Amino acid sequence: MTATPEEQLQIIKSGASQVVPEDELFKKLKEGRPLRIKLGVDPTAPDLHLGHAVPLRKLRQFQDLGHTVVLIIGDFTAQIGDPSGRNSTRPPLTAEQVNEHAQTYINQAYRILDPEKTELRHNSEWLSMMNFGDLLKVASQFTVARILERDDFAKRYGEQKPISLHEFLYPMAQAYDSVAIESDVELGGTDQLFNLLAGRELMEKNGMAPQVILTLPLLEGTDGVQKMSKSYGNYIGLTDEPADMFGKIMSIPDELMAKYYRLATALPVSEVDEIEKAIVEGTEHPNQLKRRLGREIVSLYYDNEAAVQAEEAFDLVFKQHKIPDDIAEFDLGLESEVYLPKLMVDSLLAQSAGEGRRLIDGGGVKIDGEALPAKTYNIDASKVIGTVIQVGKRKFAKINS
RNA sequence: GGGGGUGUGCCCGAGUGGCUAAAGGGGACGGGCUGUAAACCCGUUGACUACGUCUACGAUGGUUCGAAUCCAUCCGCCCCCA
Image (cartoon, rainbow, N blue to C red):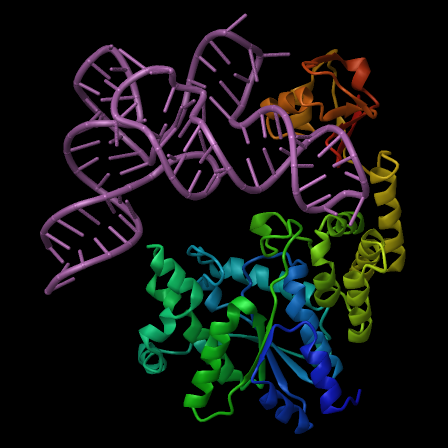
């Protein structure tokens, strides 16, 4: 692909939060050589979601423009536990966990990246070779005041929350990665700005051309408030079933649609611009746009057919209020009378019998589509065998004898 | 090393001997409305087949008829001084 530096810059900037400094990036693009684009990832979570996919998509754009991606698995730094964007210390991982996670990460990342154009590195390659003297030498190039400027450190410090010394050193480790691989550009979430800048500074201090920094917005999860994260339970996993994926996308707040289009789909920048315009001007029904968004994303990780089926399944359950085809089944056994709350726990519809009772009393439990009156806890086995118990709008279990 | 604080349910946060499974808020869940969006209204929110029993207020031990509340020791965290 031969795009002009101007065209490249436009694509690269799409969806980016900041490019620091932009003219430097433009200069690098004009050199006409493949740039080295760095992304460092901590293999902490074994399952990737759309939030993780944001920088990966951007990397993919770089690849399509002919640049080289250097993906750094932070196998060494994962054992520090970076607190970025969190208000508490992250538990460090063992070496085995790290390796396991890294492999899963790579497999999933390659669903987005082109492996041919990806240079895969582990930061233990250089970080584990450093001795204490080396460490001090690098550390001497930063000041405490400078590190303390980092937003979350400043916040934690202000709130009298603990900051461990090793966390303090984290930005330095990440910065050193940039020196080691001689990156031209480093990507990261906006919460990474500080660490990315540290890399810039360290490169400069070591007589290298400093990397350009490109930050990407954090993608909020399905709740529309918190950034997407497994621990907040608001994530859309790359390996989620098509129907699930579609359903979760439908549940995001409208305000997030444009952002999702830009950051989570592979649509050309010009098309995203048009969609964004349609959203702002209200020329299309939000529901239609959200459906399309769902289809786009599902077909990205599966295929078109899966996307269409996912949408159909969605309509079946939520528009026509029918019961979906493939639902979990549960074998009742040889009971004659059934204590429903317990059955709900066993079939994973409720977390405790108490919750089951509450759900029944609150009118949230249906058998074959019919809501149960409050206090119906004990019920004849014949009345549930072969039926589908539904809790709320989206939890189902088929009961077999 | 010295001094002073603080630790409550998913989170924040009241509560300083019985009326406390623990106010209030947030979040979450369920119902209504709807486009499984938002906003809004209602309800629920420790476990247990349950007008009762058990577990729970950093940990352990103690005082008391009775403790989240009092005492002792320990642990975590924070601040000030050195």
